[in-house]
Amino acid sequence: MLVKTAEFVTSNTDVRKLPEPTLPEYAFIGRSNVGKSSLINAIVNKKDLAKTSQKPGKTQLINHFIINKNWYLVDLPGYGYAQTSKKNRAEWGLFIRKYLRQRENLQCIFVLIDSRHEPQKIDLEFCQWLGENGLPFVLIFTKADKQSKTKSEQHMAQFRKALLTWFEEVPPFFLTSAEKKHGMEEILVMIDEININFVSPVAE
Ligand code: GTP
Ligand code: MG
Image (cartoon, protein in one colour):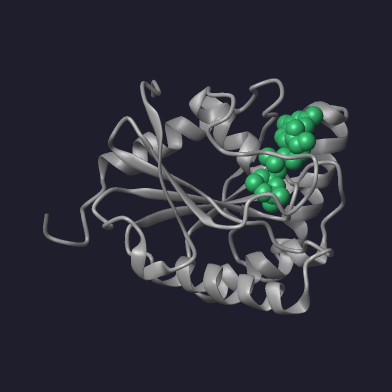
């Protein structure tokens, strides 16, 4: 798929104020600093559409971007940001989980995992929560340029094994580098295939 246009739509903390759910939507979630905003920019081939930062905790709202005037990419705040207060973390839980559970046009959740690390409890538990709620997701391993392919693949295999203790089948895995723009086409192909079959949950 060719990305011709990519535009910012809204930032929200209130799920009632999101854009009408008439177009297919894909959300990016994962630990703070894992590279969610960078991956969105790499997919749409724009430098600063989603705001990135070296410091964790940059993205704080539900940010909608519209691509080719035809589907939404959503940048979400990260989880597991230690500097944030307990109250903030609890709020993250509530409003992001509410968004993920209630958003009718959400087609697939992209769970981003840092390919440099062995499976982390917080990521595994989040995948388990998605599974328990019957929410469709795929795993996207980020920052592949930071170490050897062998190391990344080793971490992916470990993650797959850990998921198999809860899931009979594991969802698709992708290895990416936003820095080198590797792995973008595979993600766009998957989105394209889902978009073709999308039926709006609300009458237009
Ligand atoms: P929050 O919004 O704080 O939750 O973070 P985020 O997940 O959106 O991460 P962000 O995209 O802001 O990236 C965090 C840092 O990682 C930035 O310094 C990016 O430049 C860097 N980064 C992201 N993706 C890659 C990658 O593929 N390779 C390398 N080398 N660095 C990356
Ligand atoms: Mg971000």
